[in-house]
Image 1 (cartoon, one colour):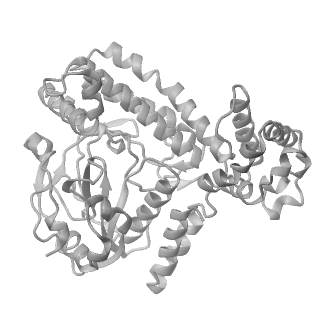
Image 2 (cartoon, rainbow, N blue to C red):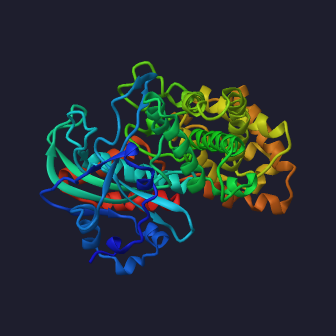
Image 3 (spheres, rainbow, N blue to C red):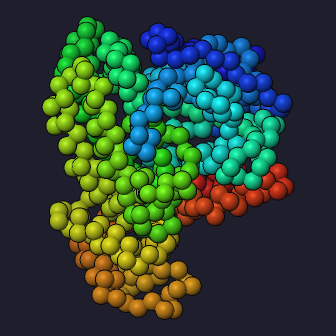
Amino acid sequence: MSPFLNLDFEPALESLGEGFYESVTAANFPQTLLRFRNDRLLPLLGLNPDRVTDEDFTVAFGEFKGRSPLLALSYHGYQFGVYNPYLGDGRGFLYGQVRGTDGKLYDLGTKGSGQTPYSRGGDGRLTLKGGVREVLAAEALAALGVTTSRCFSLIETGEGLWRGDEPSPTRSSVMVRLSQSHIRFGTFERLHYLKRSDLIQRLLDHVIRVYYPELLAREGNAGGDLTIDHYLAFYRSLVQRVADLAAQWMSVGFCHGVLNTDNMSITGESFDYGPYAFIPTYDLRFTAAYFDDLGRYCFGNQPPICKQNLRSLQVPLSLIVPLSELEEMVEEFDDRFRETFLQRMLQRLGLETLEPPLDRELVRQTLELLQQQQSDYHGFFRQLRQTFSPTWAADPSQIPLSLLTSETTLASATLTEQWCSWRDSYHLILSRLSAAELATIPDRLARHNPLTPLIRSEIETVWKAIDEEDHWQPFYDLVDRLRSLN
């Protein structure tokens, strides 16, 4: 028997009642070929990777034998600013919830596992390319310190799918995602739409007890009924988590692409990677989704969109807690975002902490330089990692212009006033550090700046090998490089 079937599943979400999900049956697939297994996550579930076979994965997550009930979760959401009451899990379900060895509850959720009552005429499937892209995004973001869901497994299912945005027929897959929770902002919005304040309170109590247990001890009454103080503390914590997440995306140059409220997790975790992209240059207008004609979810709009989604969540929560106090708390978003973003950008520059206003000024100059020059965003930090020398602290002329631009355009580049200003600022900061502090910079640069960024060309290269030759090694090699930041 597959060891996944012996996991101690907890009916946490199921215990909320039928108003939150529909019971579903998985599709039957012509074949189940395991293409990716995330052995790094198995110990979290108390499993030894050496004792889990590929067949264990396919039986549990391709054939779906021996596991019920399977729950398609119910939710609504604002999609591109328009409320949509016809959502819900249309091509996936909650496979089960398991307590990790760290004591936290985790969801195993599927994508591409067949039709549900929410499919709305869709086939309920996932393209193999879509699954490959999601594996790569999750592993890259995890390595970069972004709070993200992870891909647990990817199984090719042998069906030919027709899609308007891919050459068709294209190969199919089912993916399993491990995440903190699949409860979304849109889960609450649906209950508000249905005028079920009783279910909103039930869900809110559930979220706090399961995902924010630290608030119970802090606010008191851990074993009794929750109070408004608990609810307000939850919302403040969520605002902080989402602000941190937005700062993480922005610092690593990641554009999610579709930040609808049904794609916002109640735990502040990044998930559901469809038309995402890592920016090629520092362009705040860069848009990942080809169908985002107006650039609503462009790279630079991510922080304000996240804040707006938090405001949208206030509407259902206001049936339980005072709206005025929620609005006060969401205004803390901007300061928290700036603080987290500043710290992460300093780390990308090899620095841990600086005194204001030097820290803000250096980050501002760095972003202005990259934006004006439109050079390779990831290449700048890669070059910084590869060429940094403590001698820069003594002589600013040692800081090479090649940080800024590729070899193909270096010949035409000039030492502009902006470049000199940034170089001199960086040198000044380095010159104030001790020898011991300078010695920590290379390691910090290596921990925060990957040598292989997940740009579109990297994804297309591995997909071409899979699509044309069924050659998977380049994909596995890329996963390894993303994980190690090499």
